[in-house]
Image (cartoon, rainbow, N blue to C red):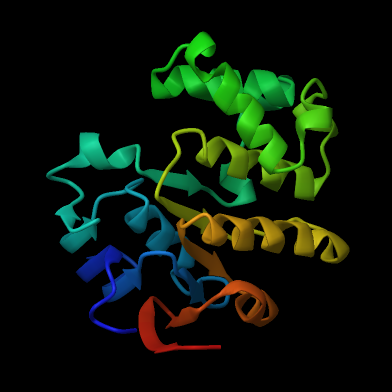
Length: 222
C-alpha cells in the first residue's frame, strides 16, 4: 500500500486478552480482510476496530484521529456489523425489517421521521425493499445479513467493519453479499471484514491480514 494514500483506519500495537499487538494500515476505499480459523482472534479484532470493546493497550485511529479521544465524533462514521451469533437480538427478531431499522435509528438517537428516507435508501440498497414488512424471524441467512448491513449503513459511515459477512449464508447466496461490498467500495467506502474463507478473501479483498492464535502472521494481496 502506498504511503501517499489517505488512511481511513490505523492501529498501532492494539491489543487485549487473546489478541497480540496488532498494527494495521487501511487505505481509503480499500476492502481489507482479516483471515483466520475459528479461535484465531478475528472477533476480538472486530470488537476492537469497531469500538465495541476497549484495548488494554495500543492506539486506534479513524481518519487520522484517536478513536477514544474523539469517540463521539467518530462513532457515527463507523458502521459495524457483528457476526450472526451476536447480531439482530431480541426485540429485533420480533419486528419487521422496517420496524427493526426504525428501532435501531431510535437507539442511535434519531427520530423515525428524520430517518424515514434513509431507511428506504438502505433497504433498497441491500435488496430488501420488497420485504420491509416481513418479520425478521422469516428471513433466511442471507436476508438477515443484508438487513444487518443495512443497519450498519444508517448513519452513512465512511468505514464499514463486518464480522464474518457470509456466515450462515447459503453458498449460492454469498455472491449477493459480495456484490454489496463491491458496490460500497465503488461508492468510496472503506471496508474491513473478518472471515475464515479464503474464497471470500479472493472475491472481494484488496489485501488481507492473516491471524493465527491471536497473532498477525502476514499481510498479503490475495
